[in-house]
Amino acid sequence: MPDRLPESAELKFVETLSSGTVDIDVYVPAWARPEPTETLTMGASGGRVLKTMLETPVVVRCGLPTHPNRPVNAKHQYTGRFEDERLCRGCYRTLHEDDQARAFEHETPGTTETTN
Image (cartoon, rainbow, N blue to C red; front, side):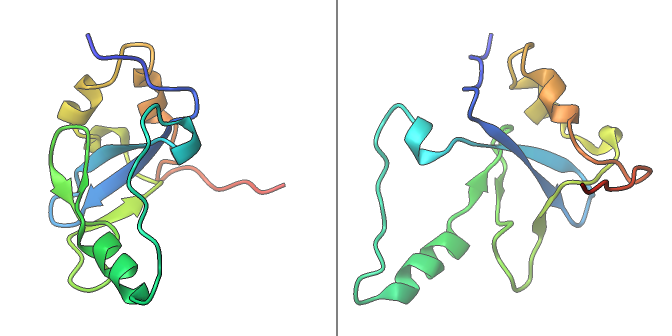
């Protein structure tokens, strides 16, 4: 059985533009990660950090490498609005049963945004 996600984890949804399938990316803030991660600093080569971010794939829960940060020739994009049927079943199955409901906490095309 998969482990529970940390409370601070945020689900991000990555849409494959050619198929419409929506995969799940779990983002855990650096302060909530159990292990230290490598930090890229701007230094003399500030463009290196941006280049690395754009070229490094985001591996979604089912193992598919995606590039939602790539601005040119994009094949993937982050989304927050989609039909539940488009959710990747493989990504969904990797979530703990207590976290699976979070995969459906998103806007659907039939809903309207509300602002306060």
